[in-house]
View 1 (tube, rainbow, N blue to C red):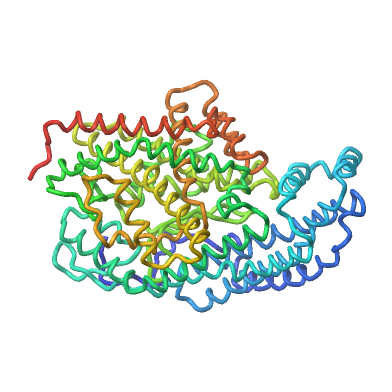
View 2: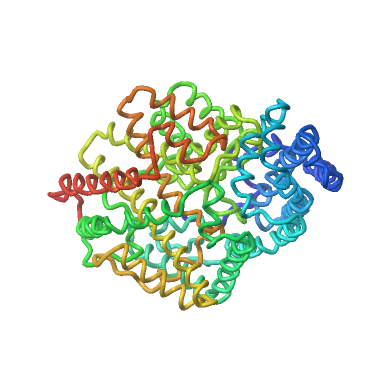
Length: 606
């Protein structure tokens, strides 16, 4: 998609904008809630020293703390999403800043809770649990605190760490402001030779262009601009690495990786096993790249050739209404109750559809307990946009099921399983489309799309995960990671993962500088593990395995009432063994082979 000018937020059709008034009717109502929470935050400090007195006092304190956090979630989400719809709006920048500051104050105010709980003798705590029924509701919560006991500090130190979180978030905030509001890529010439605005939101659309000149121009222009800021971006990224190291060391973790995985009780071996499994199958990626070169009739494949469909079956355009209908058909296998929720999201103001000036790039699902989920899109009408809709609605419906079934304390699912529901939706959709393909050409085009999901999610996100692991390790060894080091590391990994049939253009070494998820350390690997788990679940549902659909919905309802690995076992998926990753890679190999067979006689026209 190209345009001469992005519309301003106030010019957008409200039919395609999310309804944040479902959280707060007006900005004034939000301000009132904020002021109330500021007072409540100060009042909560009066509970300091009381939690270890008796079972009744402990319950009273936990109710106050979790109640404050639940109400704050609505304040934080509303302000953040108002800001995300126009990152250049000073009013909503200020509101988001107020919410962020209050977040730090709340963390500081409640920082006494865990240290006080940990001062209670465990036998005494067990006796309280037996004798006072209201405390049993908090058993899972208290067990998690006790599990992390070696990493919880004395009260005064916890308060200092809570106040330090605002500084710790600074690299991410700086990057988001730069990447969404400040950066300007200017224009390139589109397929018609007309000047077209290049943005983070439409960059992928240009890379999917059949005109190689357009792909190359977009690629080179984007990285030319990032290259102009690479030293600032490297300094900011190094600051992000250092804040992760600081908090990990302060809590006596062996590494930032160990600290990041501990929240979901995920063994570091799962992370290492993912990278090792993908390394074993890198030859399959080389085979796929060789097929891409042949089908595109290129002497050599460059990095800007990776997103253009190799075959015509995946190249059509969709209106948003058509996209919704396609998604509904693809997910029909999940049953009428799931489709009813999906339709409620489509028609109920959950989704912010189109790009506007200043809008945050990419896509996400988010929300606050007590109101419906929300989905931010930058819908551009290609097949990828259809799958992004299915993906984000998977997140949203996961949250919907969890919020309906679980109390606030146990509703928020862990990051490790966050990508499972979204990817199950995508996998069911692609299998539906493949099953209904009316020609060899269409099926081949859709296989092309599925293979791209493997490349972009299982291979590329694992490459991202390896980059993160190595970048954090370099900081630990060298004390600094300058721009040249980051570029060398990233460029080298690209060459290793893509193999000899791809020219890793020098510009791609800068890609690390534009990945928002790197500012949430060790998040991206879960796209790859989640993708693998989703394929396993999707296969069970599609094959009609008894209980598979019901077990999947039990998983969706689970929130964080169990550890992520245990929740996946409800669906018959064990990520500790590494088998789902290996099985997914075998599916990739089989799909490459199937596409090779379908295209022995290339039906593409010159």
